[in-house]
Image (cartoon, rainbow, N blue to C red; front, side, top):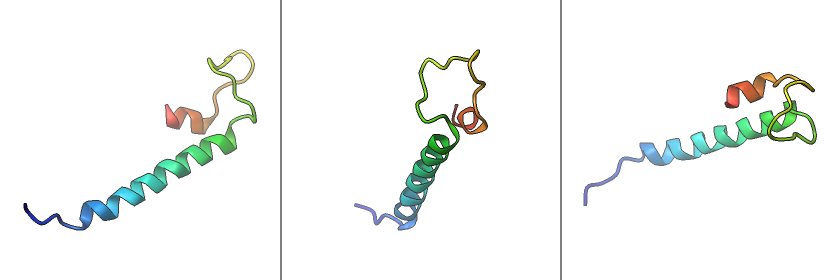
Length: 53
């Protein structure tokens, strides 16, 4: 079994942290109670939601 380099095990927590931060930013900039499917006539999609899509 070949020896795995430590690089992937350093990248996995970083990408996981970025994933959690993106969810937290999306929850911060969207309304408190988002309804899906999103009602576009009520309020346009926020910038963070467009980034998430």
